Image (cartoon, rainbow, N blue to C red; front, side, top):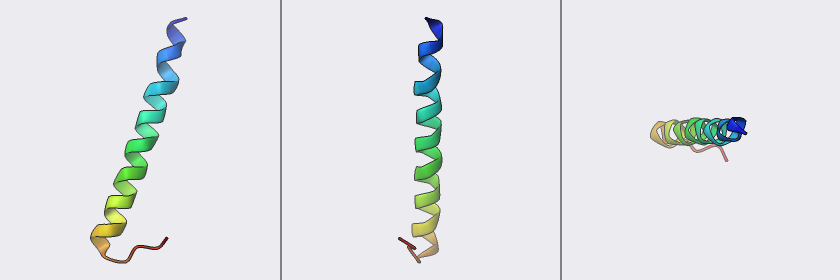
Length: 33
């Protein structure tokens, strides 16, 4: 199935988005965790 490559790409995209959000939070200097 060629479709197997899609979930991995999607997961990597989500992971990158989360990393960017975390980076922005830390750059702001006020981690809300």
